[in-house]
Image (cartoon, rainbow over the protein chains, first blue to last red):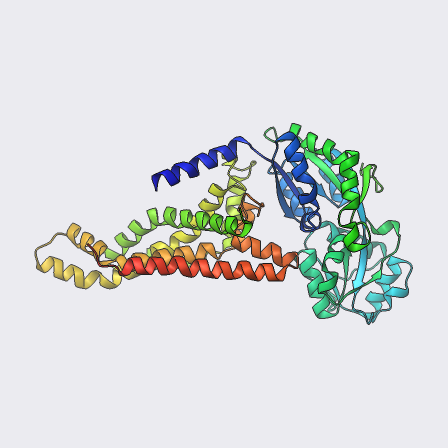
Length: 273
Length: 212
């Protein structure tokens, strides 16, 4: 028994010695398994283990903004700009992108599938009063949805057909499917869930408004002196390497017949000042 | 190592340590309160109310305490197993102390009368109660353990559900559900139920053994 405790204690102290890099990120990159495909290579090369905390973008930035993570990988340019302005983050780097889609029931009661403009698609949902599920959790996807409603000049909050799920993208898709509702989703999570839900991609077009851009930031060591800044910098450089960007581009491409993520090689499509 | 086994062992480590830590303080307090001659209404109210402590609120409290920007930040305990144990022990404490108090109080009067009639002191009353309370202790430990191993709010906030570091059975069920891996989530749920049943059964058997 005593030996067991000694072993446990030894294990704990070893775990503390190889102190890992803590990455706060969004559920979409984590739940898709992308990080499991690229992080082991980083750890093997540098000896730095990476601990991933997968939450919504809003929560990831809140965690990092108290110095409780060393780096973030998130997708809400407006929130990222705010994070940089508050001097909480540094080394903002665009890593990859995909797109947002509007999905909904195959019957498509609001006729979204014939729309070529996403704002008009939302206006149709609004006028029809068709059920719409919002994430309602301050995630990157939720932020994007609010931006779109605002750009369309509409405020759906408080409408009886506007449901806020307060949960992750996967759970929100299941909810939308059960209710026969529309929702805004990122491409990756939808491809993963497509077999499990009765939802179709109804607005899936190359629209600059629907770009979903994932960025990496290190937490500012001047503000939070305990963060592992050197390790965070190494991870940024690693993510930008051509072969790693290639891995990102090909991740599950065969399974889904299209790329889940397209590499950005550090070049942002949506500027983050 | 098989990941489900790893997660199960981590759940047992966190919940077991938290139960023991809470018992270290909760059992003596509960037995002492239960053995007192006068009913302890204020303590009872506080402990019984504490049984309903919302795990998410306790988790959030520990998040602020243990955060690097918080008062205990320098310990670096946020998103670690010791941090999770601390939060869980706070949740288990009122259950363990409350159950111990209620169980002991039910026996206190007859035992006191008997010991006093045999000429025993108040200290001997307490010692006799302790010896007679094996089953009460088991019920208290089972209640505390059952509450913390099945709890998801506090471990998510304080542990962060980090794979190979702080993921436990309940948070694993949440994430597999979120990923749409419902079969895997269900399997983990069955493991969680099985582990809880097994540990409780071991406690009960231990409690029923004849004292030496």
